[in-house]
Length: 469
Ligand code: SF4
Image (tube, rainbow, N blue to C red):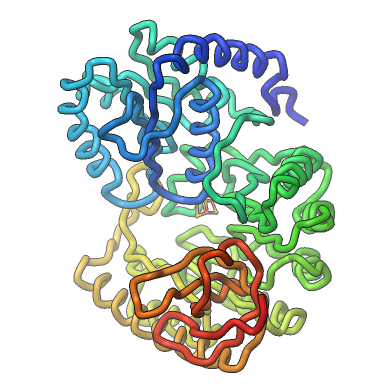
């Protein structure tokens, strides 16, 4: 086990001491913050910690950025054009800064760990004074103190990727929570920037994961999603003392935990042990988000995905044998370099065969610094667009077919929200296998588990009625 795997308690106490000092200065001034989050659940989770620290430091949350005294953009570098959009967003804040010279503007998140970007931002935008990466969230008090003392700083240090436990967090959601089980990724899929910006895989200790879940459940949370870039490789470096299937077993019996989810899974690591755990543990939800990316073996090889179409299909088959009501969702990239018409047809046929409940589909776009961006035989945009349209049309048809099998289905739904735009108030929420259903009901039922029967379907969703609350 690496000696610097965790940030020391001493270091965290020092940050808590700085936060307490800042609180005495900031709280009496009624200062507010606004954090805008881009990207995936990892960033949503990081923003909870950032908001937690800022609250501990004495800020309260502003309803919109125009009225805030501190604005932070938590950025994502995974999608195309993200940098350009960020530049526009930051540029637009200059006027706010001119009207409020005390305003602190910061940028954080995985994009800040891309080579050279922090320097570029500080140079181009004098109104930005705080930049930090994803691995230094534990140092927010110290960084903020420096900025309040007039410094402009960028802390994007990747040398220390150690895990910080017990950081504060501020959550909006009263029913569901994300819990990180690991950070980073060692897979180096050839199109993906994540391993370069979020570092190598580090797994949290199982007892820390369980403690966090126990604490969330004792505060009323009943649905937990375990988070990692590839949760199935949890513990592969030996540091956690167990693998993912055992972690599921270890945390699933927390009293009061009704639903245990996880994302994302990598097909190469979804082994028999994990499948057995999903089948045997009563509160592990019957849904796997299993990105396939392509249905063609040559493209999968070029993507460095380390599995074949046949292996992927064997997982689907095995899981459906073990857990007949399981649902799969996926991610698919079309127009990857070298993708021939035949290769694309393989993706369509895989989608046809599997029948995903939903698919997140993308036209390939090169990310600077990745292997795929340097590949020859890039596909013309017009071809990517056409393939994406065909894929989406097929998936839309499969979603309708998938929905139709739910007519008459009765099951428990966790109410996530309501829509009052129509003639009657519609509640919505998910069955444990991730299928979303809408049904008429009272908004007072928000966050409750309600038994709902499906009566109808439309293109994307199920429509039902409450059987009992
Ligand atoms: S598994 Fe592949 S796609 Fe997912 S984060 Fe890691 S490198 Fe990126």
